[in-house]
Length: 239
Image (cartoon, rainbow, N blue to C red):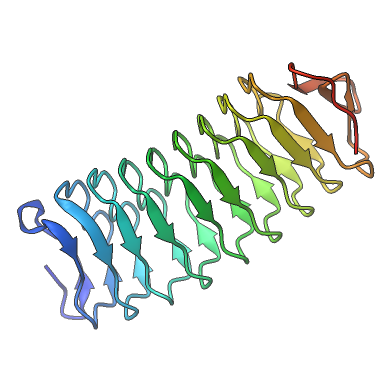
């Protein structure tokens, strides 16, 4: 169902089986247009599309691959939330903002490269992505929000870019295979629960120029002596 201006408003679930390509000339895809279309396995969105609404593909449980248009500037909240079989997606360089929970519970997603230009990793962006192993964070990101990588159970290491200022509540909570974290000199705020439940953490690398935190005997503290993270498997030193 389209508007007269070629906005895709709604797709009946019974009509979507396998691969789907909206027609060239489609201008936008509205909120929840494909929500719950469990027969959809892949989608290629034409470059004529300049915006995709919140939750447009949420809970499409059979969706495995997506090709996004080259001209969108934002991936809206919950866009692919609950797409439990999504394995691959390439984010175009035009994107500068990715909304909350956009990839939440994409349980088969293994790796992703975030585009240069985005500044915030929003709340719950990759929460419950149980098979996520690697994330490339661009050096334009200045903040990692609450629950951003919560329960990413296969994430083994994370390098925080040199311009990041803050890590929010439970950002890496439950990342049970995370073994190494590198924190930059720029960091000024880390929530006390940011690394809670990271039981395999072996090494906390803190840039020696950081003036707000210190590592002693495998434990990360702020300058007031508050414990923020523990690397229980070995002792760690500042680097």
